[in-house]
Length: 362
View 1: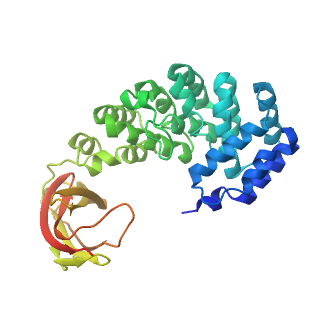
View 2: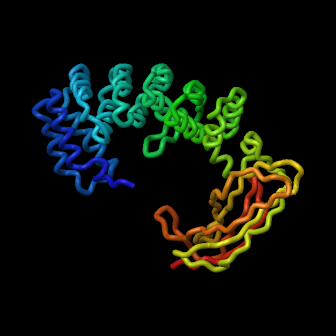
View 3: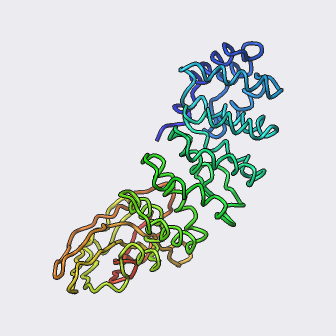
């Protein structure tokens, strides 16, 4: 994972200052030059905000003058990559006053990295007005622009402000996804899947209904788009999502395991278990096999976390077996507590076997 300095370094900001000064910024971009020497200790988001403010200070306050400098910079191939991210954020501040011209500039900027975060203030300020523009991007010849239409309207885009209106009701943005789920670019289709997955977190029935509609007229890529878009529901064992994808929760199988090789595990070590799944039916079985670790909390309660094992078809009478090593290496996103934990095997969303083990935490 790149560090904040690697993404938006002093050298990058100095280069941005030179480019904008050459493009017509006032007084040779003094705020940006000063900011390049004062980035230490700032997180990436802190750097973006600080550089954005410096761009706003250096560029003209009126929109025509501001836009002219940015468009002149766009003519230079060196104006690309992470240096454009805070410029996009500056466009979101200055362009909100003029709205459609601001979105038009983001349309042109997005191919240099992405403007997915910068379009969100427009969508928050006036969803209907912004969507009227964004929908026109779905047939743009540039895949970066088409992806921007899907990614920018995601209700819960990571590392960006949520869109409360679309969290509450994602249906206004569905025409964007309907136009793009069969897109010729995998880059665009992956964004559509992630957008559908966002919807599934708050409106699972709508996500499944949308996926089912797409599957009525599929192309060779539709199944993959839908599977990735419903991945959270599949891991959660939601029967409507599993059934849509051909993974019946009532599939006739027998399961052996999890059989633990390590009934006691210390933090930093591995939980090791064997498993076997046999298709006892007379037809091939489409299986999604996961395992669930129930982590014990400080108060003695447990919280489940689903992990993927495999997805495959099993012929009648066929047995699938294997060994899984699950790491308890310390991670920043989870705090481990000593006590009895639980691991379960889950086939097509239904728990088929479980075993308890002890975890020793420092």
